[in-house]
Length: 189
Image (cartoon, rainbow, N blue to C red; front, side, top):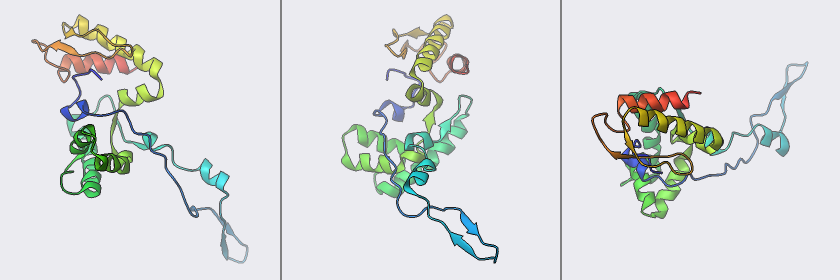
């Protein structure tokens, strides 16, 4: 990914890991209330259980909305960081550390990240790219055009429309107010 609007930790992110969620045992099935006041628990069939199973772990990740403040983003990252610290122990103080270690092909980091994947926040754009790549590409093109008009010096977009800044000028970088406004405008449709 060539975006430089990403935080340093996200720059090291590897492609999303898709982790299957295995469910075992009985579920919290509805009960059968008898006329005599007794209750009989029913066991759901495997088909019924699968129909009510939680969505794929990627779909359970917290979504960082387009208009999220830095404080809101950091609050979501803190939950993830606590999971990483708990699962990883020393050397895994937060989510950024697990991403960096994973980029260094650390097998423990892969296990820790997979264990905490459902708490790892996902930016709106990341989710859109994963779930509706055509819309993502259209929004990227709009963002690029807006940023170009605003005076940013940009790399040529790749096949997905992703681009970077070639030079940080008076407008600033991907965190600057003008760039943020262009991103929000492009992705808000």
